[in-house]
Image (cartoon, rainbow, N blue to C red):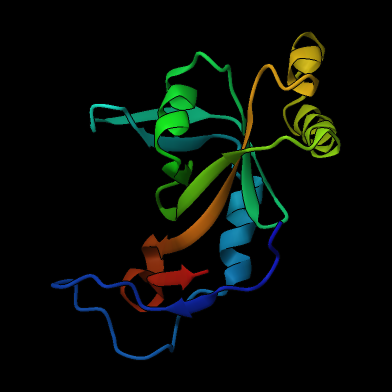
Length: 166
């Protein structure tokens, strides 16, 4: 699990007139706050035929990674099994955080227990019906490790557009 602060820079956005330099870049804490507080997230994966798949999900930003529980037969799980590259985005586009990530299934049972405990508290959702299969590794919990993250604050757009590289 990574908690290292990534390197901030300007995103490459030709034609948008972004300023030069680092003045006005968003702090990493801005992105992490939104990743932690978002209730709904968008996850984008790629089907085996190359076409995109997008779905709204619940999940956790914890210790520098996004965690997601899903059924092994779900479209997103099947996609991630073939291609671990994905995108996770927060729910509020006016203060968007977009995470380009690589997913892997968590095999550590202690980490799965931690996920269940925090997830149930965040969503006030009883996971006991899923717990046995999750803890026996029959159903996946994915960890999406960020590669590049973008932060876009609508009210400060040009001056604040930020890219963090891990």
